[in-house]
Image (cartoon, rainbow, N blue to C red; front, side, top):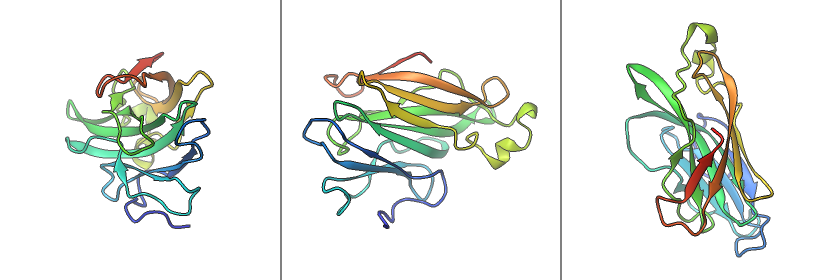
Length: 190
């Protein structure tokens, strides 16, 4: 089934998530993808189990000197909070480096809180220890994901080259659903 013309073919695979909470958005489906320019993370939702889909909503804040945003992941926690992660690459110190970012929606994917950087250090993949893999897989391959835990927290994992070679990293993310805009996500366990 074709869902969106807004999604690009590059920038990672689109991902789906379902809301299994007991809240007002129960059974809502979510699709996350990168836009055609690979500089935006888009979320679509379906309130009727996939028959019709919403237009795209940006999970990231537009703008900035971004080389790419790619490889998004999505999950929904027990409270119906939608979480999204992605890699964002920018120029840092003359090199192209990336970080993992997270954004959350408290209203069923209609709007997103401002994103928060998850990774605590830049991942600059073009290193001798990574060899040619950084050119072939600029985000370290497809080794990233997001899961919602039973306690309502999110667990992100991603490929990171901060030590000169790709390794898997993880972080626990808690979203304070009662928080005001810009103060909603707290990151633990980087």
